[in-house]
Length: 116
Image (tube, rainbow, N blue to C red; front, side):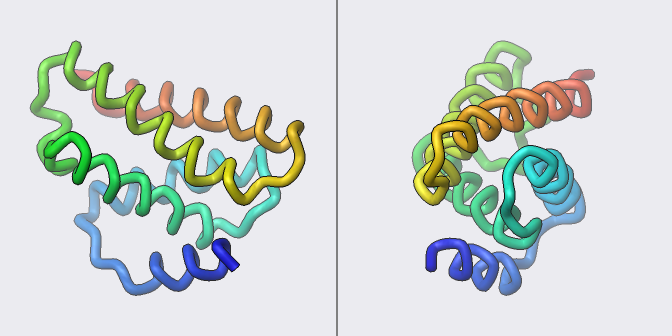
């Protein structure tokens, strides 16, 4: 399944400590809202990070050094990518609504962490 593949993919990753911390923080928040393992959530978040970097050509490690307006634009883009990835495996509409709330909360937490 896509969920098992996401778990497997994440377990093979090497991330910088900062990015790993952010991925874990997002997964914990998402886990409070939707019924999925934290490992699978980390895998989906990583897939969204990979797609983000490929589509925007922004190195996620340089994210904090971007201008605030750029950070906000890219944060919204990333939030949409995460929602797209995870919502594809959710079957019920109420779970998708919960995911939307989780993405909002994680985005707000990220903005607080990365604001100067």
